[in-house]
Length: 79
Image (cartoon, rainbow, N blue to C red):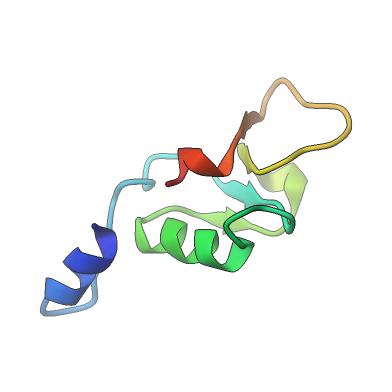
């Protein structure tokens, strides 16, 4: 939907679906690939970080101890 809207817009398109969400970290082992998920999140107004501790949302498989201040979600949440 975001790609369709971008194609139909006259100027530079910026979606707002993820605009009000915290900064997201997408794991390198995510499926679909991190590059594709990153593109979608940015297209829909979201923010991405490559540093886990800066994120408020962690997308993809996680190992180890989980922090209570971070939301851990699967890739399907973005899709």
